[in-house]
Amino acid sequence: MIPAKLIFKGSSEEVEGDLTSEGKVLVPGDDLKVVWYRSPKWNPKLGFERVIIGSHPERADVRLEGDGIGLEHVRMYFSKNDPTHIDFRPLEEDSTKVQGRWIDKLEIVRMKGGEDIEIGPWRFQFELDLERDQENELSKSNETTESS
Image 1 (cartoon, helix red, strand yellow):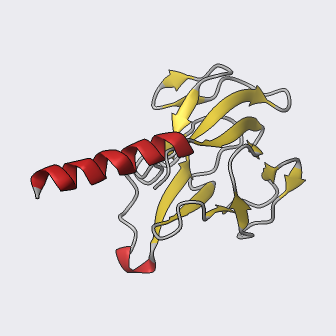
Image 2 (tube, one colour; image 1 turned 90 degrees about the vertical axis):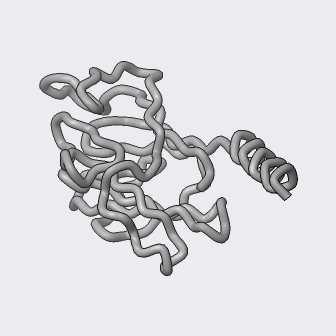
């Protein structure tokens, strides 16, 4: 899976309180790794790794707590075969935007990196670290060669 992150950009409207992740108050510029962490393991035969973004304490891999965040607000699917194939799928109605466009519940949006997204009233930029992914692959390749 390509290293991915959400960069917090603040709120798009007046909200009560802060947005937190794992008990830490987020400030603009903070980044959150988008990786599988605690949700029930996804079926490996499907060829995708699933990451849940939301407020559920036991299921959300990227846990966000604040106004307008659903328990399982968004699911992202990262292809195991094509590292550039990333799908973004909201599970909440009328509460998620990509590049300023409302995304319907269960609609799938292909992500490329660099997109501005809104989850509830909270704004983020979705980023991929393709260079870090290439470094990881090179490191794995070197480890395999050394152990042979």
